[in-house]
Length: 89
Image 1 (spheres, one colour):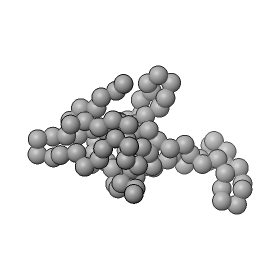
Image 2: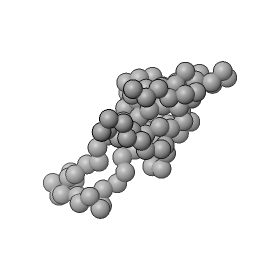
Image 3: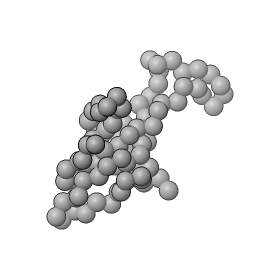
Image 4: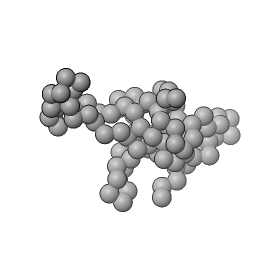
């Protein structure tokens, strides 16, 4: 498994929606990048900045946040804790 360092977190993004609320199909070229995901792993934090998120938290992040990585056939995002906008409760 991937273990993030310092104040970084590993997030598994939710899949983009394929249909609208009205039942229309959204083609791959028109899908928006998801901005919500689940924290899979978190670093220990920095000395002066403890981690506020933990494994299992559902978080919202900026549209262009993080770096995409693939591991064992799954896609993840590695981002700093400061890129996370909110925790969904």
